Length: 398
Image 1: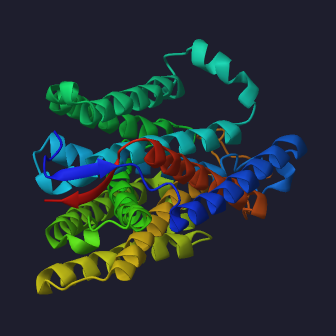
Image 2: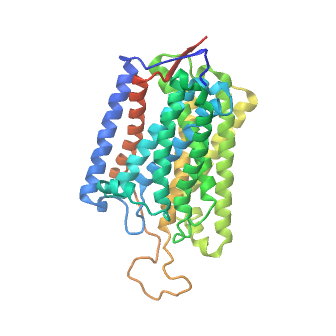
Image 3: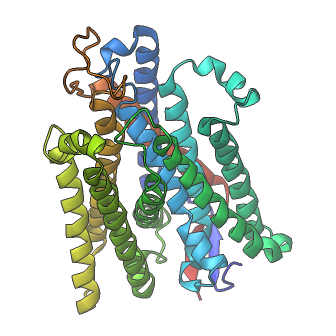
């Protein structure tokens, strides 16, 4: 339920910051749309993808947005399900942000997989032995639950349903994130993936990325609104979120370590691990983990000395978390495809013209970067439009 001392209203119509941001986001969305259109009509030969790496950088952007959408709901569930009133002013924003991030991620995912004109077929014809079919229900269900969850916050007569709907949303997003991780974990043909540990790893990643995204958006919206309700002016809330992020960072490091140690133990996966830990993807892998560890240490030191973080420093730390987690996803998605696939187990291949003797090179092109950035911009554009229409932004507390 909403805290009675917190007031909400739409963002101001003619705020200069709001108009500048929205104009910039529209330009990025148009650029991303053009990149998607060009890739669709010219073919994937203009990208860095090939016959081995069929899920490229846009897929990393899409999965990152989907995971962040699940984790962004932390603010709302901590308030309504676990009774932490520190997050009540940000509960509505948390729900709207999660739905907008999911929509942006799904748009990138649909356009990246090809044949978006056949989306209606995929949504009406199901193969329940495929995890992809399950995820159609999980994604659409998440959006529906998010809308209902927001309605229980906006409509006073529905507030008695806020906690049960919040509990349903919490369970649903855990299942959704597990399903997203299982897309890769169930791919037995890719020995670098074939692991059940990817589901909890993706849950931990979602908690970090979603919480960091919410922490980035709150000051952004406060500047639009010229509001005093922000993490910068609410030390207890900021400290609580820092503790949450610290534990989530430790969870990411733990599951990532278990995943790679397990693969090193299994003989048939050692070549995959060599490519990630010492080969072509070693720089991205270690940079991502070092960035996460460094950010965790900064959080720990700040909490230990009860220091005050400036708004700018908080933005930079959250940005590091987001970028670092995307690096881990890059090694999981791209690195797993870059290892030659074992087509004939227990057989010795004496000759092959398929090009499976070495690690295929993949370098994303500007078209892929533009497409992925357009998906992020679309999520933020939708968020800005919703904030303009509905009373989501907290303005003051008595």
